[in-house]
Length: 445
Ligand code: CAA
Image (cartoon, rainbow, N blue to C red; front, side):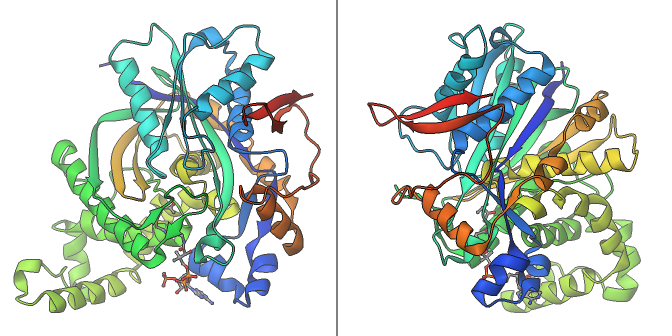
């Protein structure tokens, strides 16, 4: 079967940043370590006055098309994943196509456009849709633009405020991809949950503590489902495991569970048994509470073991480098985790072609998906072409008072006036409202 997956990626980060330890924590009366150590976040990215999900998505897509030498005729599909949409009918992909048509001679009239919604997992679902479209032979030699774009804002004072972020990831999906090919095997864990939702409201209603448990439960189901089609997953089988990263501390919890699961019944479990015992098995306990206590004790001991720490440092920690500087990008988050990992491999001159990564996506409401990806021969060139860390460095650093005004600007109920902190150059910007209450955009040279 022909390999299908991501040929190239571009990223657009919101142009403003908020330092969580230096600027946010003191205003909350919090110890900065709650952010840097507990949540694992240093900074959040925010959109400037002229930015929104359309401009960030269009700017990432334009960069991608220019770098790959693509024209509108090469694009058979534009899928946008977002949970920050401002229009319940007209999809964001049409706004983005409209932007791109301002700078290209051709048009996207023959490209199938849509918008995917399932919280943060929609980015991966759009990727799956694009791959399936190609595998079904409906693409007529063209590729798909898959764009994950979000402005992840919470109500002021909500516990989630610390995990905000904004940015877009644009992916070019083709046959014989340079970056990664997606496995046909995939596992799902899905249930009707009310952990995080936006019932006709801009900011989410969140049951934060419960959302953590739902994330872990659905991930576990997805892993078991994946193993049922792909075979048992061993701890060393995948070079990296990029997870959906609402904040790095969430991934720390998920990684420990994943490690426990993948070493069960292996030599690693046997080798550890002398020091921390074997993993408690449910059928060895009459009482559920006693089993839960035993599991908790085992996990506490496991997370201190050098074997686990080394595994985490090798397979998980490198996936968090971008996320800890930009916060949660919802639909784009797991795709940043993949990029972080590949960037880490490039920095360490690792020859990754042919190796596999295990990608674990999650969306509240709730669903998890696990699939494998095989790194392509051209991965290094694609990663070297990205300058995400330079862009992160060049963001405007907000004071707390400025942050409050930025939040008000992007609050749909307030839409406060705000003079931009940065000067737009060679990019699409939001420039007002049309006669049917549509948002309008133009390209600034
Ligand atoms: N030094 C070191 N660590 C500290 C600390 C300090 N001084 N102070 C606190 N911490 C630790 C805490 O122990 C905690 O770690 P553990 O969870 O490992 O115990 C961590 O820092 C966070 O502290 P709190 O639990 O006190 O933080 P909180 O209650 O203010 O908020 C949250 C945490 C509930 C996750 C909140 O940020 C939130 O609601 N976020 C939005 C929802 C979310 O992201 N959920 C994740 C799963 S859902 C999902 O993934 C979908 C999505 O994208 C939204």
